Image (cartoon, rainbow, N blue to C red):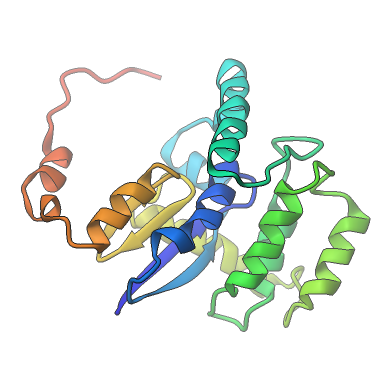
Length: 214
């Protein structure tokens, strides 16, 4: 059995779409999945990147594209009332739902992602967050320093493994990023011989001829 780690932040619509699509991709395969909350903002800061929603034309394109993808995949998706928003409370709630050192269940992650991407409401509304917390019934207090440190540590550890965005699925030391990465992931898990060829490793050895100065 292979172990997959699904790294996500609820702020990402691609994480939501990939989460909903994942069971179809893994159908019939002998795998187990853990769901690792991180902070996308922390990953972006680590790699010196801006998020898609921080570049105005890219923001518009992102929202159009995810609406189209949801339509094509026949998944419900409504943009939350404000986006981007601060997902910190939701990511901490995810971790607090599990005992220390463990990751949240798929059901918990589903509640969090659908809280954001179903219905078009304000993801950070206090009354909605309270109702969500009551439904999830976390084992620990999301405001405890233990949970806060856990989220920081998980984000830093993901960056150290080369994770630069969400969603990222890790298996056998390989990283599959984004909704479109699910196609590669499925091919790998089903034994496509391309992954035994040199192209995967060769991609990391392409030389750089110029580097933009910041």
